[in-house]
Length: 453
Image (cartoon, rainbow, N blue to C red; front, side):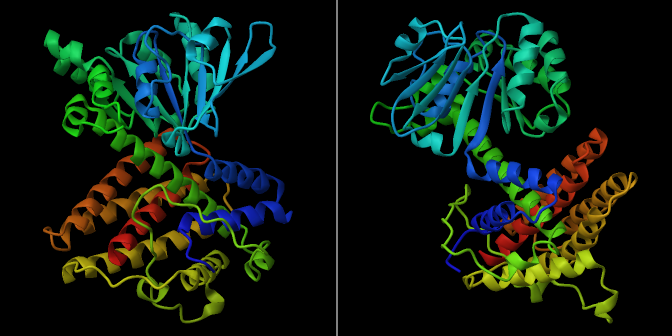
């Protein structure tokens, strides 16, 4: 098989599984959803009350003045396209397509919804949905709920995140809150007034468990940091909070893609028996190489280095564990030879190896439990995941060389995972058990990437 990223390999298998007709109906539906999510750019939704900076934020993320100052459009879906095109839904329900039209031309039609395509490089990774609604809590609630179903990541724009906004946001789906950012969009005005720290402190108190991160940003300053030739004044962008925003968005994009890959892995594992015939053959045409979002390729360690001691009697190995070993061995065999290992301190390397063996064994057992979940199984799996990830935090904190930068990142990742899995446990979503197992696999892959770097 050609040199593909892990995402591409999973995408190829998932695509063949979805087209095979072998999956049960429920799994077929889930496979199609995951396939669509992996094939399209990550969907960002910009929400918030009127005049909260959504349009300026859209221009910043798109890397162009899509919406000039003073132009007002309705809810806008912005995605990549080879030419400048806008499909405008008019008040009578009809649609009109404009090619190479300006924002002023679009606004002149008084549309109620606009789908715009532009050949902007940023839109190859993300699509943007700006939600526009009247300054009315009920209208904003309806618009936000509608947009949440069409988003992977949400950026809620606000001046101070007041009580009205808190009530609207509190009713958002729990799933989207794991990938949501609270944007304090008038940082420049608040600094001038001397109230920035107070607003951020109040927002932090109100937003506990509601957002992944709170980011203040001076939008005029961030937009001014872009030069006419396309270059960026980095110091000016950093001072405005723009670099922190872009870095955080890219991380959320990567996490969103990685979570989908992990969930696809779990789905393929759970149905490995019915998909066995697909594992024996490769697709007729070489699959398209999909570049990973992150710049560092994810390379897995050979299974022999991380697999726990063999079970004395293979006949006693649960079916799910046996399936995982088979798939893990096949995936490892497909990977290209990895580069020479980086000079991690021996203590850190030993700690990583021990942690990887631990995750491998526990994830296999948990995945086996996912196959035949009864009504109590999700809660039990969540409890086990919480305990396992807490163990990871404690072990990494007590072992390895603290001077190793990768170890510091691994510790941060483990603590972030512990916080997230505990939130999942509180939310009691139907999908939480699968997501928690996927989270463990994500930690595993980050450690493997450090070992393989």
